[in-house]
Length: 221
Image 1 (cartoon, rainbow, N blue to C red):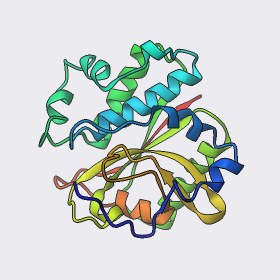
Image 2: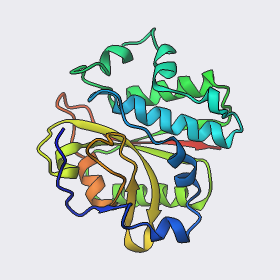
Image 3: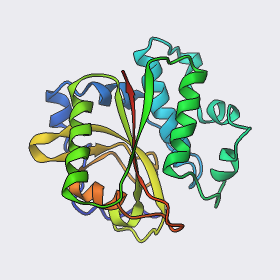
């Protein structure tokens, strides 16, 4: 992937006053665990690792030697085709497949009381936008809410890549109606703020096989 143009996006490196001046508990839970996906198709795996380590940190499970890694997580799923999916040119995962994997991983790590909520986006309409804003506001309200977005790369970055992508969402600046995307393809995409309607439009772009994108809410409660 080449370095993209960033339409309507504002890099966190130069636009960080919001996270410095507000609690943003879920941003700080995830940021130490941000990583770069190890193949062009492994964004689902990398996003899951970031969120699982954040969840385990809040649950008091993390130790330096015991963090979830891409390899450790993938080894748990040899009974699935996730390994083949994240291989180069492997096709990745769909939204609901990743939801199933996350639920299984939460159970494996003994993370009781956590759930994965599915938000399938059928259209970038006002009703869906209101739901997305409410979910992002819940992320800001307290610790233990970790969204993962599944969006179309070209719609989001205008970089010409007609493929889907997963990355965690880390903070919501309601006053400016923008969301912080912690992109796991760090070779090309740095953490950046995006207008919420811009992200929704990219999530409303269906997959090439007609399956729908959207976002997942990994949350406690």
